Amino acid sequence: MVHPNRDGGAELTCGWCTDRWGYAWQIMPRVLMQVLSAGDAAGEPPLPR
Image (cartoon, rainbow, N blue to C red; front, side, top):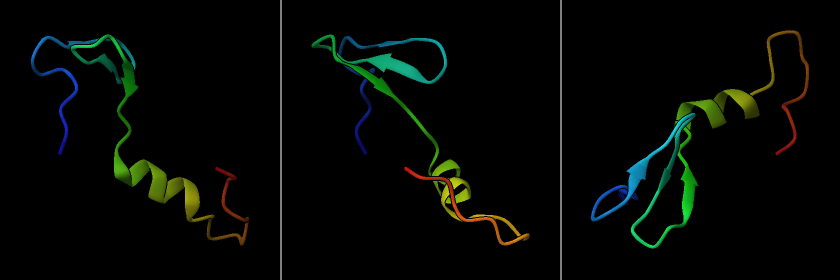
C-alpha cells in the first residue's frame, strides 16, 4: 500500500494529502465505493461512477 504523506508529504482536510513531489491525493475507503455501487433494497440502480 502506498502512503502519500510519507517522506515529506502532508495531510490536508477532507481526506486529501500531498506527496513529497506536491501531487494531491484524496483517500477514499473501499467500503464507500462498495456502498455507492451496490444500489439499494428498493431496486434503485447504483450511482454512476
